[in-house]
Length: 70
Image (cartoon, rainbow, N blue to C red; front, side, top):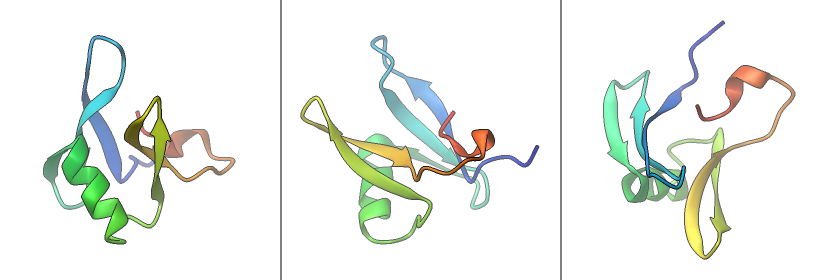
């Protein structure tokens, strides 16, 4: 299976994704950095949702199970 463009690198104790890795550009990002890049249009396969009052990066939905942040 092909590796997703972005992988979760670290989670908080509550399970919120806090650090991410771009597998293509080989860079690490914090949640706020990743959100900023998504909002700038740099990651077209991802969008931002507000979950429990917190901006959260999420994968765009599709039918491929390997395309989720993980």
